[in-house]
Length: 216
Length: 219
Image (cartoon, rainbow over all chains, first blue to last red; front, side, top):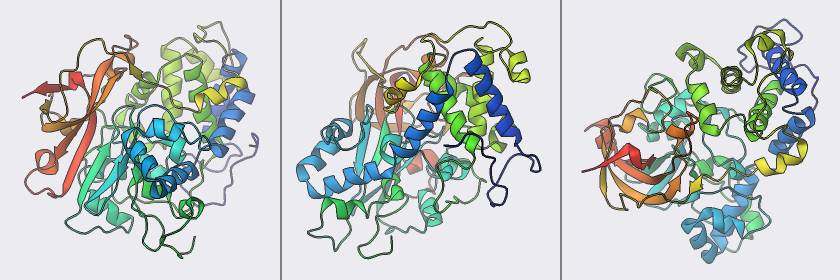
């Protein structure tokens, strides 16, 4: 990734720095710290580049989606996943390695699972990539444990009023991956076809998988 | 610590607003901050609990008004200065000016990146038998340590059921203070919504935390 490009000023997302300078206050400050740590010989810029590249290319919700699709089509794998997700995923080989104590929690017609980290931003990033801003921000962290139906409504998600909602607050180094329900109308689909229906939010519990035939 | 980071159950923050097609980083510097934190952690300058404590310890108004990666940068600067890896004058100058303490594992180099892309293992051998088992009723202790803890305020004093036993893990309350790993049993404890939020709470909701044994007392 280019190290020297200036950030675009024509986009509309929020900044917490003043505009008008070529380099933002934050860019200057981060570069300063990187210079200090490089000059001291604690880090090397190439290693920082490689970390960023790894986050951008190696991880992402495609990893989780393959695991979910496998669980939908292979009952033995589904059982193994629910018993010990780290171990089960370790047997797949083609999916990126996953750290200890990943717990898969299964949605059913009776129970919907939703994952939050009220204290910071704990998230199964090997499976889902880096968390989106909303997952790390105050509205979700504050309300998910007290008003999960209200939070789901913010995502346009409505559950039957008698469905149990289980909120998992990730307060330790355990990580939670929601195994969503397989969409109807996908009988006979391949793992690869099914994986394309699995969304990031469906594995956090703030969404459902895509319906077959819906626009991607 | 009873900081603003401990947000579970707070009101007034508004709706959750998801950004469609959100990029991984909104600014180029955000990726650099993430990489610096990961690299310095891997070099042995700090553990994950200490780095979390430094973000939590930011003044409340700074915590609430800073973007996620800005909090990471501010916490990292404070931590590196406090622990003697960088001098405050150097942060001001933007250059290395003097000899300071080096991280214990030495320079973090590009060939080590693969290693840190799998989350670390925090499970440890058990120093003592578990006090609780699945099905036990427990109360989250009414404790208010001024230092780092992973027991959120919204469960303190409340009764739940032990649901899972995750084995023994590094205890963040100790590790964050660099007082050793002090491994403790870790359990998923589940609470009824009415127990946490009162009689008007949605009866279909249950909430669980993962609680270290010192956070719990038998009833």
